Image 1 (tube, chains in turn purple, orange):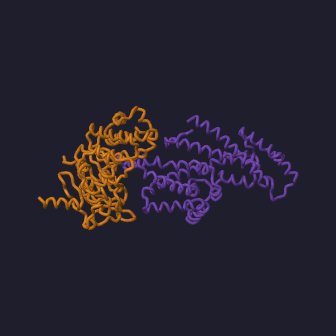
Image 2 (cartoon, chains in turn blue, brown):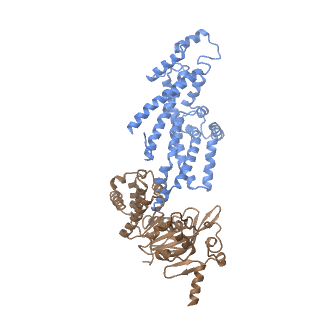
Image 3 (cartoon, each protein chain N blue to C red):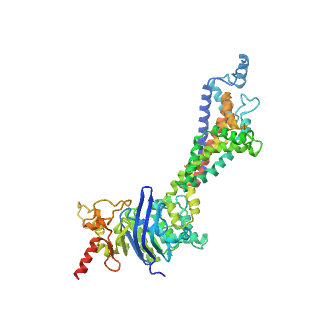
Length: 305
Length: 332
């Protein structure tokens, strides 16, 4: 196991390097730059700024400098947010997004798994159809629509919940609902189909023939086999949800990392683009390794090589 | 104590599918004494497994018991609740399934799966259950039981897994073991080993066995009684000698003709039973075998034949037998 993890870490460093390289060159191919604005800045001032941040140097040299610094843990200063390093921004914004995202993931698991199981057990009955309809809606309706509908009904008309910021626990309700709607629906569908598959397996009949009670059969014999597809999905989903959703954060005015991704790209804040991309890539990779290890723990047939 | 361990009388069972009612069992009656071995033979869909499963309350979803009584070891299965059934299953009656490759849960160890049933039905604690599991593995001829307990199903071969299934089935020393085509998925040498093991264990433990198979060779060597099923009916029932040396029903005769024999010449063709099995969604009015029967008479297409007895045990459901017996009776 340890050998596997060490091997994976080395492999993933290569992956992160590849992601960083591709992002670096793609980002520089896009027209525009951090110091272009509607207000005309004198060419001299622009040149001075570019010189300060090293943007006047040839592309490849900039790439080498950045990679060497990044390898030492220095992701540079933000080009647009004066006086802040990229690391500062990520460390300040990530916890905000992660808190909302973490709660959402928890909610989607706690709702999605049981509802999916129920749908499978009540296959073809009314409850199954109801759950399937809700799940289809959850997958089809984009999050900005859900956000707007929630805000309009619960926030504006009924005045039940605050519509912006994160000052009290009530503020979390709507963003969490909006963020967890899609994953809940997705997990429900995954769970339903894999549960149906497992319920038809021969070993379920064996379990019943042993005289085990219904709940033991379900929780011991079925769930552990049926949960694998959900584990696969939750890993990367966790990485995306923790780093925040641009749409949801924008609508509910949450000062999270999701906004920074888009803000950085729009403002050509090169160092921040690199920083957030590498951060997200690392998180996804870590989650994938964790998923592989959880897989091994759930299903002994899987060999980690 | 009742005279019979198993006493199924006039069982009728249907599956209510979207396409309509499938009459899987029609008036099936089976009796079995303690320690007896009964073979149920018949082609796919003839109701062999359904009969056995219903005795364990394992009838699959759209299936419904419509009539008849099922007595087992003093219990009236047809009136029992699911909770009461759970106490019997795996305890007084166990089952071995056809495919050992898929019948064990892949994510739990062999030990876990054997101990589970011991812990459920006995007062043994974990340590004692483990000891018993080891004992069982030795009993079914698995070497290094200590090591096997910690292994997962995918680490064992098919024959080994079937042995484990047998160990699970025998864990609580059941009165009745149902073997649902236990050797179909295994290769021939392993088949012989498993059958030998089952007979050996039967001698040791004295349980009754219901052997479901379409392999006539298996029933000939193992069973004392044989029920031949066709289209959800027992069309002939008798001792092994009756069935093999004195078959009465045209279907049974056909089955026995179709067995390859040692003295069959090299390019000689086997004799098949012509036609296809009946569609149980729309069973014919008369004898279900009539459309394929060489000796079919007019009445066969109109009415279901009554039971013709040839002695204490041996009986058939066939108009031809009925006619012959009546003629014999008249001649006397």
